[in-house]
Length: 141
Length: 208
Image 1: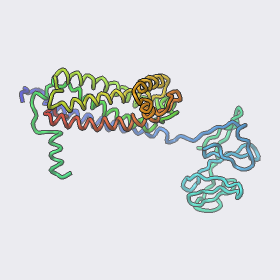
Image 2 (image 1 turned 60 degrees about the vertical axis):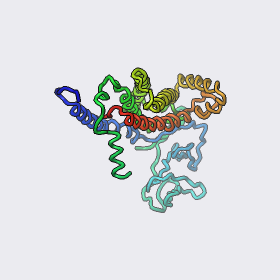
Image 3 (image 1 turned 120 degrees about the horizontal axis):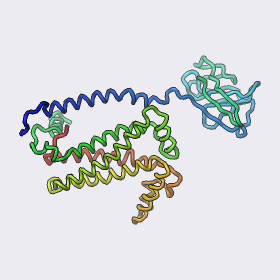
Image 4 (image 1 turned 180 degrees about the vertical axis):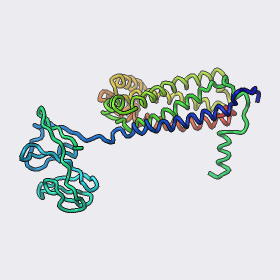
């Protein structure tokens, strides 16, 4: 080696650089976890023009969403079709007037009260607002 | 890999002795290393972008959301953009340095060819990244690229493989996304490893 002795050796500088990288890497964990978790509390929302979805007494599914709507005694009612057991998507069978869960066989009556199966809690209702000819639905917190 | 094999591999990457001259800054200006640093930054930020980017018709909308709503989203995207620009520049300067120090001559011939291919792939990656933004200027750039492809014999087929549709106007970025994020980036990563291995065989710089 033809280098004169200086204040810091090449090795020392490189090892300081490596430690700096390590500290920076650990420092990145916080912003990266925030970035990746940005949508964890996001609630589902959907809307449809009321002319496109004439409501009936039976539940009807809104497009490809988990929202179902029906005409209740006092206005529009919304249902969030997730089983209260482990969250599978339930669907309404209008002949049996039951909500059926495909995963573990839970059944709910038309108002969402549990009838049979592992689920013990009623289905969650969804928020529905009628505004400017649209139904705006959202998950309840 | 056997223990002996691992040891000999590590000694290729970090040999005991190297020529003193190879350590001088003037020998390399660290341009190759700088390009690789940019590539590492691009890989990390690129993976982070994969979590939210939606190739296809939602490309522009998902990028706008990433930019404006997600925490640190704009930072991750800017880092990806600037690392990409820096990589094109540093790879080009690296090439100029290699020509200047005549490092393309035999013994290092194969590595020069590898490097030229890597430069081409870097430019194509930068171009395809520009198209992935899905904005209006991306559509214009895609039109130019397709016209260039079509001027080749059999170019229509090539253009369809690369751009995925006869007209760029409907804004889908799916094919370009597959090329950008998997095929081209993977090829560059693989060729770089080969490039570094050849540098070691040629008695080049010791990496950090």
